[in-house]
Length: 249
Image 1 (cartoon, one colour):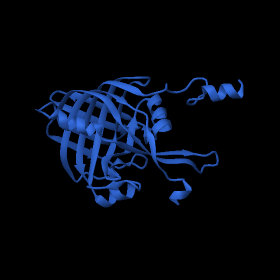
Image 2 (cartoon, one colour):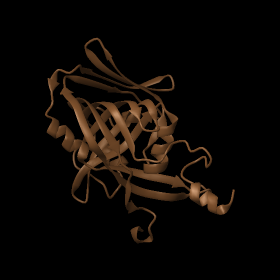
Image 3 (cartoon, one colour):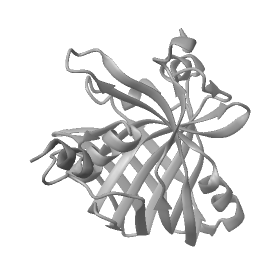
Image 4 (cartoon, one colour):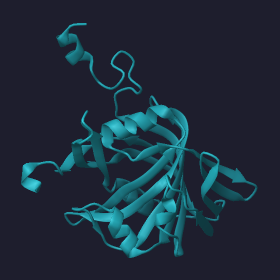
């Protein structure tokens, strides 16, 4: 293969059979259970990178079923998103994500910088209860329950939240182990069709684990719970801050 061919065809690894196709990526019937809880402010400040700002001691714990997604197939995801502000604009910082499918792990990390690790999340209905669980190996590290579709939620508020920017810390090492890329990335979800949104009583348990430390942001009080289903597009990102730029030293 000629050098020009490598440059023309290089998109993702491996060169001759990339682990994921080019984006953007469309999701159909994407189902969310989001438990917003109050946590320790010092714990939040310890994990949220500048120049993002933490405004309140809140965390959104998410379970997401993705039965139909461009190039990624059918999978489930679970993790923590922290409400933040960047240059005065409110959004969410994706702190941790665990999922059970290799292409979105590879694509999420390499393209945007999603903090994805392999685990076994589940989101399902048990009789009258929506139940989310997350196992890291054989160890249960998260469990959430929520009443099934008790009260309809105003769609405008959900759509406004989905329109807000999200932020990621993208880190890719050099061959010597040092950071070659260290960037704050912003991305949006677009072309959203909200098919339903509900709230109900909810609970959330987080358990300590050395390699999946979701419990380092402890649950002090459940603030709200949201269950919704939507079609949406996950757009590609943009770099809004380069930590390795000489001007940032």
